Length: 194
Image 1 (cartoon, rainbow, N blue to C red):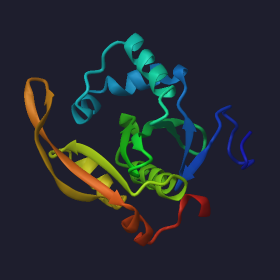
Image 2 (image 1 turned 90 degrees about the vertical axis):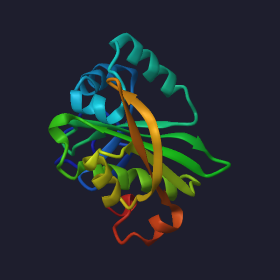
Image 3 (image 1 turned 45 degrees about the vertical axis):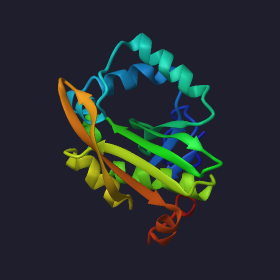
């Protein structure tokens, strides 16, 4: 049940929140929605992943749900509308490192939801988990993702040259990171203060 009577109950547990968004744990049944989002040509190019079959994606989601080194969430609007997928994966608790992943539905890009979701993920990584560094990778020509990552405080570290093949072309990947000290210095409310 929703904590806020103004927010309709969609039956999904909201386990974490951010500015105008919330996270709910990813479920196997979400594979069809993810498949739809990944089939978008822009998303396929930006993530460098061919959409593949729904069956294969269901299998992947099931494996991810069993993987203790990752946390995958649907990003929800206040009314419960799912607008994206966000994950903190390759978590190395001993080292204090993890990788952030974000994919928004095409109709919800460019509306500040991405930065809000990354802010909330950083709050989870540094405020609830013992992370010291969260990194992210994207094509060097993905201006939208680079802008969203910068808005969330991620710092450009370098380039992994020719690290991604998509549609017969090699792409460089930008390497960005957010360190615990940088997160602590951010002047914004934390998820638990919202």
